[in-house]
Image 1 (cartoon, one colour):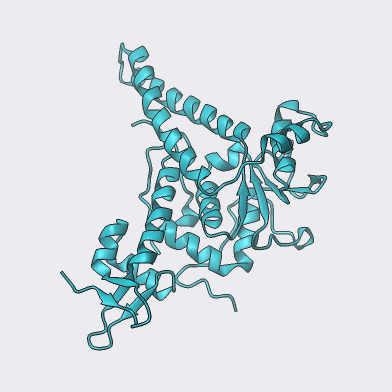
Image 2 (cartoon, helix red, strand yellow):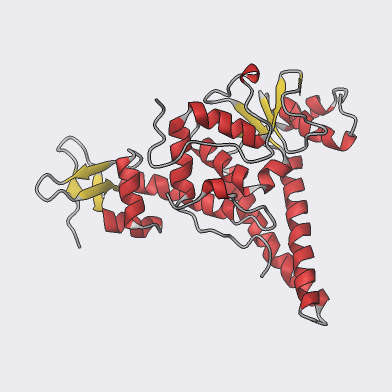
Length: 89
Length: 213
């Protein structure tokens, strides 16, 4: 397991590897990277190896939102998403 | 130049009312009331939920709307279940309906609970006060929807019902918008909200069991 990093000495924010963030969120690693690049996940890039690490706090907040979204998406009897929301970004 | 990230710009579906600058542009934080048809359409329900979760829009509904959503969702689901049983020549259609009801109730409860986390409801007092006004609508059955919007202090009422709530018209401080035109107009000026919606929709499974299979 990759080590948990500290963002800065002034912060107690914990960071986790992209793969772990993806697993917790139930999404692909590419989706995590896309969210990082879009500035939607608080992240830290290791200057030595270039690997990204994501703050546990932002993963938890995103997970709460995605769980609600998934439950709302499963409303029985509702119309499906139309093609404009093509989910392959 | 507006940056939509990895995504193409927001665009209207065929048949939706065209964008009209005379109607203005919904701004961030706009109080927006949704009717049951809007909620039942996944293409509107989910973007509106993401917008509410992230405080781009203040989305409201009412107990009446939620009950209507549950009623229609149950009806559509059970109709589909009966049809499927009949198509398969099942002689246990009654059993199928009962089983289907249990499935659909659970799904509706979870979905409504998820929406309630981010969508507000007007208070009972506000609803009672608004419902006591004289309805301007010809069809009385749509009055609870408009009264709900008034009680919620909504600037916008999103509805697919163009007969009772024609796009661009309004009553008191509430303007009626078609949900597709509303979201497209909003996303064209708020790329940040649009990108958030696209990112989240890309990460939910599709299709969801919308009808029994």
